[in-house]
Image (cartoon, rainbow, N blue to C red):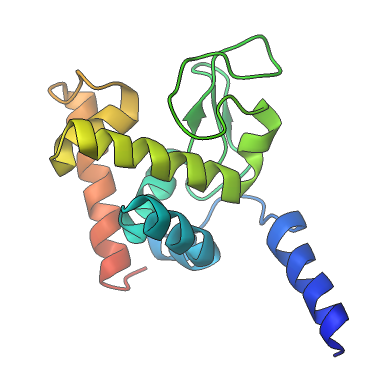
Length: 165
């Protein structure tokens, strides 16, 4: 294949073809988006595998997931309060606020999640504290729901690191 066509195919594959639906396992999420997890994790100093574990728990790997009750969007279920077009919550990350629809792009969702998680670890330098903060706020971490979330992420993280599933 000529180099120009290969570049076009690469761009189309990376940016336009978004796998739909849920993944079968935490490892499947890792493998599906490994490049994006690795880039974002490296850039923001967080474990790429931990990002994949969070994606498994948040959306089961579904890049188009929407939780209208929160409202949270995309692979990483980024919370986005607002009028329906732009996020209005005051999240302090590069490029905020995005359009809600951009959160359905897995690369964008993973980049925001890596920034959020890096900030959570900077404020609360424990795995449990940072995961509880990612799940719903910096003062969380003691309720059963938070502990269940933390346990679920840690199980998925172990499965990804062990190559299981």
